[in-house]
Length: 123
Image 1 (cartoon, rainbow, N blue to C red):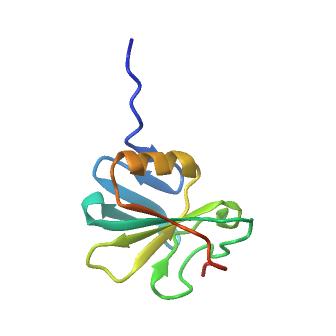
Image 2: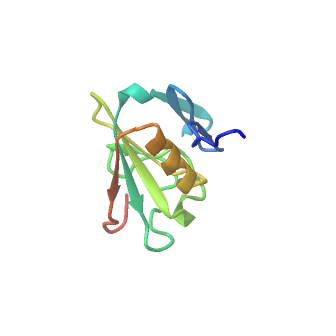
């Protein structure tokens, strides 16, 4: 019998986590992508939202530090991820279509993850 192992990759319409990179779709307006090597990730913060309409930032930045790729459904999602890249001041704020599976994959890949409690409106 074949042994089931946890998934090591993740893919949806917003992001793609492969063996060596994390790709953000619709990062640049209107269709551009951004790719970050997994070795360049310093931290991924997971922010859980207690209610809907918590994060109204559809695309762009509200604080000039955190950039959000376009996601029209972001206000209805229950988690936001903030990626801090090594040696960079800017951060990437993003959402995924299946946050439970994405969290499982990044934990399996031993990426640095922290859980943050919600603090007011996010950007």
